[in-house]
Length: 268
Image 1 (tube, rainbow, N blue to C red):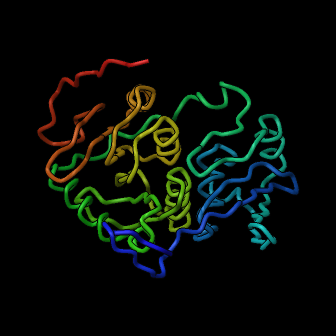
Image 2: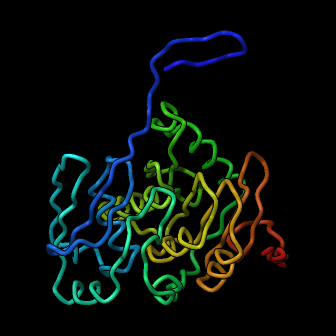
């Protein structure tokens, strides 16, 4: 690699994030190819299957086999026949890119599906959000080496990070986190998610599907994400950086948050 700093040219080695096609095949039927980082793939297989509504519980993912291909990885998954029948009614048409969580979904109804409603849960102090953000900054080894990946983490109400997963795709990172929580038997409703990305509709929907009642993102939410979070009873926090954050929905879970939340104008 050649780095140019001012007029100086520096030859050096660099760490690069790996991005690989990951094919998800259910009961022999190809479903999707996601561009992802080939780490924590057992977590990814389960998290993707749960967050996409392909299965309803971890027990329904009956088998996972990882097969190395010449140009990627195939995850051969076995699910109950009734789940496969439903899955075949809503196939994906193209690959899912690292920045896309719903690419290839053919019907709007499959994208804008009703979310489950979050439990009332807990109340956190703003200091817990800051604690989680500080830990998030220092617990991303892959991003520290490459500067090219996202992270999704799960924290307890006091702001202690317990699980963190990284990936070139923000949706993939969240799927890996959801899978890790499910494999560990953790009650996702007993903590909150912290994301190194914007809070898009898909990220909120995946969190809702996992029963996570609070989503904290370092960047902005979208209007549809705000609407979905409110509908699902999720506390959505954006621009969570240093001493500041913005609570967009369900502020009762954050101590001292304003009772009335101003809704931003939707720009087209």
